[in-house]
Amino acid sequence: MSTDRLTVLSGPAGVGKSTVVAYLRQHHPGIWHSVSVTTRPKRAGEVDGVDRHFVDGPAFARMVEADELLEHAQYAGHWYGTPRAPVEQRLRDGTPVLLEIEVQGARQVRGQMPDALLVFLAPPTWDELERRLRGRGTEPAEVIDARLATARIELAAEEEFDATVVNTSVAEAAEALVTLMHAG
Ligand code: 5GP
Image (cartoon, rainbow, N blue to C red; front, side, top):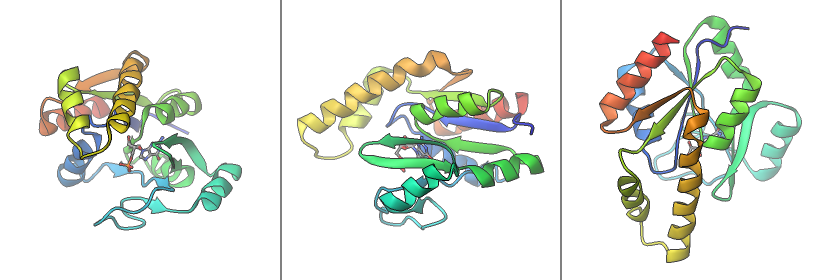
């Protein structure tokens, strides 16, 4: 099976991956976005089956056991995974596929599909990322410290990726990603 058209967008929490994906959905409808399975609770406005497939722990474990997930990882206390069959179907059809996942999952895709294009979305500066991670709410200092520590580890993964896109502006980052996808 050709995996030329599988692209993974990853990078640290808070860098703006989901905003870039939202832009692509609007401006590049020819790209198919994988819908992740997750055990985290649904947020206001999210639609099951559209934004995520929301499942409980046992259902997620059954999917892992049945090898139905291309990759999966635990993130901030919840499980996330990419359903394998729809991705493989789109790749067979020749549709460009984009996964927006965290770094551990990106590594697994690399292992399973060596030809996949792994793109790292980087913040313009560490200070900017820190500001975004701190500014998300009124969490206790320990929570913020843990988040910053995780972000430092995630940033260190950049060298494992095929390309880096710096998120200076959403539109520029998204268009740079599309250019990379076409180049692949
Ligand atoms: P959220 O809770 O906002 O949906 O996602 C939290 C983090 O999990 C984000 O960094 C997002 O990229 C990542 N994520 C979402 N879906 C998946 C998935 O299917 N697999 C992996 N490994 N990470 C995911």
